[in-house]
Image (tube, rainbow, N blue to C red; front, side):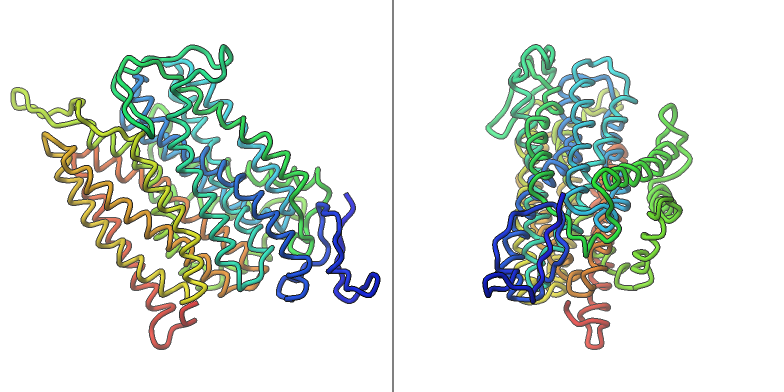
Length: 556
């Protein structure tokens, strides 16, 4: 495909060539959005087109990555023969896989180009969507098949890193806060979309005979508009198949209407070679994530020899080393980008993005099943033995779980916009303080609800506190990404954005594991108190690096 070359000094009919309308093609040779004239006459239109195609592709990625938080709730309602611990594990597997894939994805734009990368990573989402739909048709499907589907769903998590890296290249620094906030914030709506759309499509056999027979609910469920009584047929397998209706046109749109900026992607080759690079990079992430999951899961699914923290560190480090050893000039290109790891701000911003995005995606994954387990069961003592039994007046997770992620997504662009006005670090400090207080309060409410014979009385306070936490994470997501855009050059910002989002993505693995373990032990509040302690550490770190009198960089 012939490239577009825009030269500021060239002229056609007495006008700069940058002002001449041209047919958009995949490759752009010259790109200088810090030049106000170039931006207004040429850059803005191209950048906005790429942004508004990127957003729905990223939305689908988030939806497929996070869908196990909703699917596991309905699997419990339908009567799939797995324990609550097994179901929490499915969300954790998707989380670990998605976070790990963000590491290679953060380097894809330079190696393969923006258009090529977004097209390929979105097309790969079809694999987990189809597999999930097929295996949910049969309640006798072995657990390892669900673990495999959750593992492949991590592709959607990985896509965030390359999407943000790509969009950061299209906009001038003065507008990156809003642009990245829109891409990430509206992309984050994928979590809400999954939590609203999946329960809705489960109520109707929209795919006819292709989607198979429905299952009957063994306990009450719900949708956005209300409760669904037990005994009602549910097409749970539509949770996977429905994404095909959205993905196919989006993948086509990405291929024909997005662009590669060659000055940002100097190592991009022909389209076929670039697409192969994307696949190879994701295979590297799958390899290390798969080994990590196998070492973490207990028998018979794995060896169970490493704890959660060891798995995160081992998987992350192993992925980085594997990428450096890549052939075909991939490793050599990555070694140049690995210079970001010598900068202390890479590590400080990574911790701060765990505070914001790690909390957002972690709670998004864990909240639906947490609502079901904490408020859908009550403790009953029989002959001195306390057991948890289903509770008839429980609120439905499928009715309420979407609210928090929705608020978190809608406030992300706001966080970028406010940070453009007052500075990102000030905004981050405020939301961190809010998260400390709200997490402690939420933990206390969870403790009261778990031990109460009428847990629904505590549900309004519980959901209100989590909405507050999600709102704070959304604003903080925008502020931290704006800060990175100010600290780093255009070439470094993409890999840093990708790496910080990769490490923060491990929140989607940690939160379900931590909350699931504490719920199993009867102490769900301990998880929230632990998160609050981490948020205090982030308060101190942000102040030391960016807000004290002699800060390294003041309020970027």
